[in-house]
Length: 205
Length: 205
DNA sequence: AGTTTAACTTACCAATTGGTAAATAATAAT
DNA sequence: ATTATTATTTACCAATTGGTAAGTTAAACT
Image (tube, rainbow over all chains, first blue to last red; front, side, top):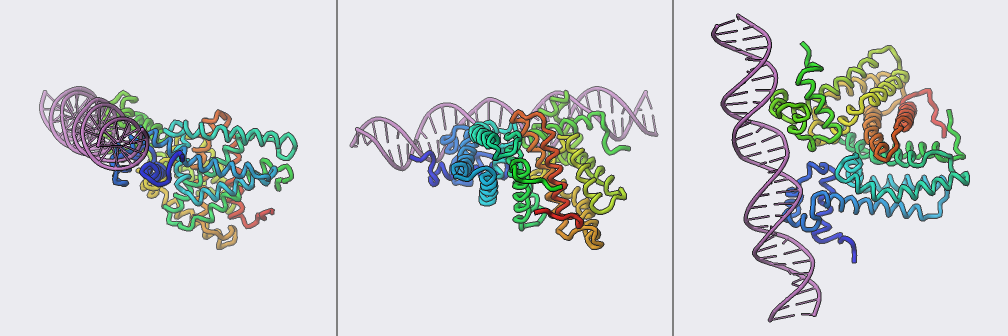
């Protein structure tokens, strides 16, 4: 019934692949190594996912699925205008903190020309279109300031993806408590969104 | 006399390597391919740089050198307190826009555990120490608000590195005019720095 | 002219990579 | 019990990878 089971070999492969892809990258990930870490032969992986790229796509699909579900949840709420945007931002930061591997994967896959970027785009496009549409209609009723929705969304996106780098850089510099920078980023993003979108907000200075 | 010549085989190899490392990444870069693009045998590369990692380190050294020189220039100016910080921020954004490959390289090499991260750290540490020291002394005279200098610097750093992703993502989405987002980022960063450091600045709301 | 040094090439290699094909084991269906 | 299907393995391979060793050419020195 399920598209993929959380347990069982297939699920375990996806978990291990996520780990490796998001921390070492696609090219540096060896199917042999991943297989060995699971006590399984490489061909088992290829049996389930056919090719290495297929495995990456499956990982992307699963993780982006989680992300998209969370977004849908907020989109289906009855929050209006600015409030919905803010809820969205908070939700994404919460998710990013809870699942840092997701962040790493997004960063890996966000580089245009990378193996998984195509699939990510395909998954994100409908969501993007829907968000754009909604924002435009909000703009027409005057609940939202007029700007290019795609620009705002993508800037927000790369703020979140940039978190991955930031957290890792800070950690590498020996600063373990990476919570504060994250909070700062969130505040920054929300302010950016507010300035761009909230018609009732006056930019001071 | 020079440490490396801009022309000649060695320089051309460094150029091509920078291009490949910063757009495709370290692992995805093949020495054979780079060599072929230069009309040269792979062994010529290895003759000049011994190993692939050695080549990466040389590239990092050259590029980080440029970056550090520009930073030194501002640090040696007679600007005080907040003004110096702002000049620094503007300079880095100018550089980043002029040399996008540098950004890509930094991103590639900023991932902890990546091949060049060690060398980058070694190059950046003295600069970081110096900046930290300066900021601390400014704090003591009250020209700067009290915070953890490293945290501020690293956050600024990852903002700049994050630009690489952002520009590419925007371009991939068909938004060619990537200038505005960059301006927005710069404004954001300067505001962040101001809030963190400028004692004369009052955070509204 | 002869010798040394630097720059580059040809030839080669061991290791790893993703992937194919076929065999075997396990589970489900009849 | 037998068949069919799914899951996993063993065996193998062609291609690519970074790297070594030795040869060749060109330039610089003496």
